[in-house]
Length: 233
Image (cartoon, rainbow, N blue to C red; front, side, top):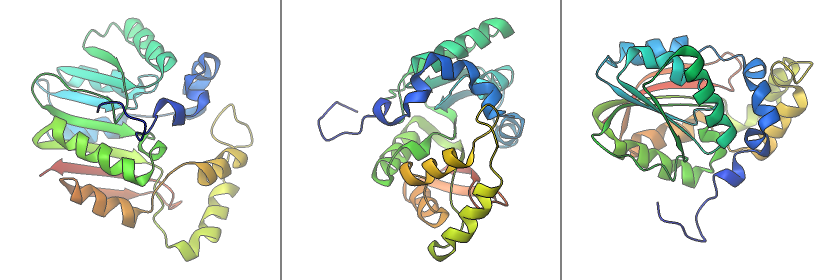
């Protein structure tokens, strides 16, 4: 997407901590991400040894390196240089040669070559306001082959506005006591206050409008998290 003064600055809204080398060095311990369920979901949806998978908001490469043994290439896309450096280091340690790192975001990634077979994104789309989510999802649809898979996992609110106080208070009450592992109550409260996590009943019609058929939906018991497996129409 060409630059313009009206366009969204993804780097500026990625959260300064994600651009900080010290924070990134501690991120894996804090996040404790297990990508196995998402890898299996993509394999179940048809991703195989000939497939190209794009990981948007790749972070430190946890998913990209877990997916790499099962496909031809993973394109790890992130706006953060320290995150991409961590991904490259992880690939070197694991001896992986089919992960390609690209510094870009949802709104700036430019795909070359044949359409991708799958796109994956975890905990990244919520950095975009809803207008830009729509733009991002439509851009994702354009890089996917017909029938290609989108696996989206993010903070999504599966409750009604009137339930917000009760649901969020339960979520906050289960927060980590330390920021070293997991997210504290203060961090979760900041997310609700400053990030752009959508209601499920906003995001799901948006996915469909942008050219995706939702094949599977998973809502977390907390009602603050969801995962979708979608096919490009």
